[in-house]
Image (cartoon, rainbow, N blue to C red; front, side, top):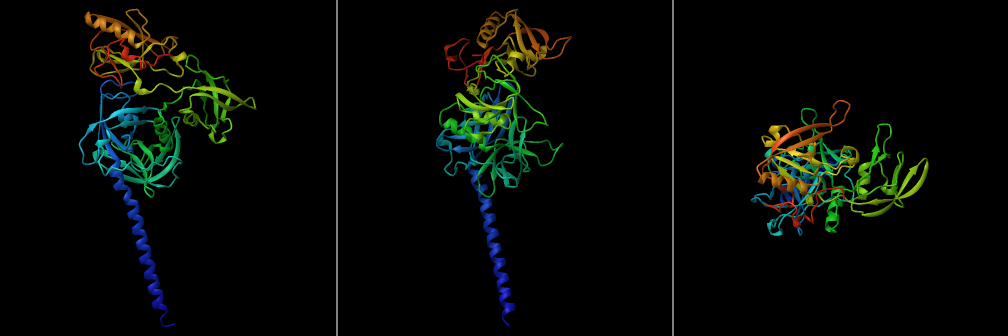
Length: 458
């Protein structure tokens, strides 16, 4: 009895010591992911001169991370790499910037893959460990690594606060701060050190606090796998539109079918797409589920649908869209134009007109008032429907130092019409083909363009 208090005291001290050692080991284990992340995370700087649709002209910075050391692949966001960069450079910690090549870009996922020379990878840079097969649990402690607000190679921590479906895409939601410079960097499970997402965006601090979103790694890994298999990992053509409502959730119901796309599906309004035949795990709750399932599956697929309360199987032809890196556009007078094959092109662009993608500020086109996201209806009264023909015509006008008369069409309401037309007399200057694979470039109609695409309806 005399020794019992001493025994209890020693036992208590032992437990405290054991708990302290355990906690220290856990903290050490959690902090070790930072050391590894410093090795595989890179800084990225991009210069964009001729932006396609939804890109911005100028210089941009962000983050990325090494996903394949043997191939020299770096993952980042599409909005960091751009769809048509004039130049892309990356640097590892304490290293100088060097040139990278755009290998793949997907604006739907906001994902890009860059390629660098293997000998540019530092010896201490291990490739990142990706969590490809499952979603992170809500509540998982995570670190958003990158270069927020020019604070290079630093981390903000938080938790996975939700798995969100917004804007027709899935996101990993986190309360870890994602600021300018974090985009494209890894969102890392603190405990396991595995990357669970790619930091993409944060809501404005004026409207929210602690709301950030990352591209799910389960989707990004699918793209990486298809690239390794040398398949086209682009999104598929979807020749239908789906009806959505707060009252009808987790159902993919056909609203209408689109024509004039390379594929057509034998579906009717009201049909519900359920899953791939024989694969109930591929249940389609929304459009993102369908896109992710079809990615990389060219050919005819058997899909189960519900039509008028009956289950039936239909064969859907599946084709991937052209790779964005093969896109070819045209620049003249500060205006970038090209083809953008929309799903509803039979309604929004029934005459297959060339799309105005960007108008540079202070350019000839900008001063005249030419607007982006309108269509080139005619040029000197001619309907020129492909980029090469327009390039050839404008090159001749530039050589002859003459202006051309361009009529544009915009999708804006005007008296009893959904289209508005404007006319411009444009001095033609600096005509050139542009695109990810264009350098100083082939001339209009060059045979070098045969392996690329101007995104027409073929």
